[in-house]
Image 1 (cartoon, rainbow, N blue to C red):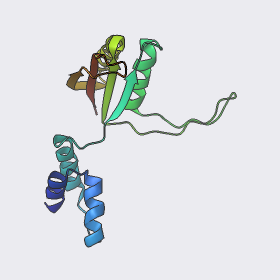
Image 2 (image 1 turned 45 degrees about the vertical axis):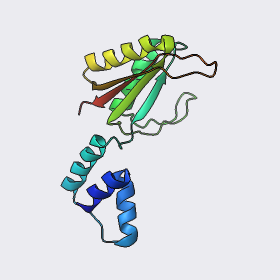
Image 3 (image 1 turned 30 degrees about the horizontal axis):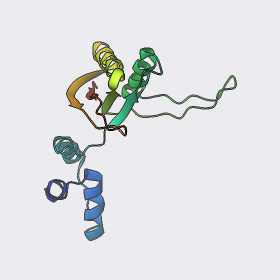
Length: 150
């Protein structure tokens, strides 16, 4: 329970709370079930690391759908062949934020809708903003947070 208190009061991730706790007491090893609960709590507190994929109009929507799919499904390792370098395996991410600015908002929405339609992820939150740009004018922005379907 001390770890949960540290996470909330200091606004730190579970990983950081464990590191801090181990500096004072090196026998800190929470069991797997408690770690799962603390990771959920970390999400509730808004401290969990979310991978962000920024989209633009420079590439087609198919590119971003494939990229989001790779983030949520993970990538298997591939050996070098036919002049292509080896690809390192990457684990799937639990949460993915797809963001778009201005005219790229449609690309972000289309990619998120397709990922949900393909049952790879669920839209859990949509954030909109109107940040001021360097020119002094504002520009519409969207952030769509998706949770991986396990």
